[in-house]
Image (cartoon, rainbow, N blue to C red; front, side, top):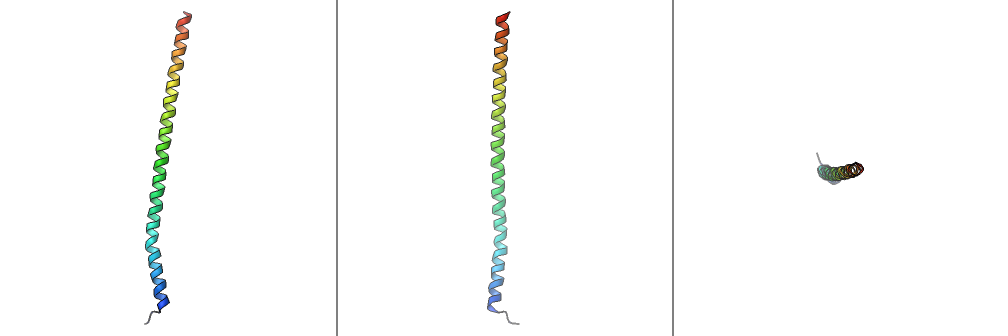
Length: 73
């Protein structure tokens, strides 16, 4: 049985493509996970900042209300 030269080239290219496919898949997974982690960190930071601002605002409003209440007594 004799394998023709073009068949060897096709088999070689197919092997290279199938081996590099796993590398592309891993690169895509790495990029996706990195994006997910960065987005999660930004979201958590934003949530924590908004929560801190909300608590600070609440404390100021309570303080002002208390001052007004104490001044009217």
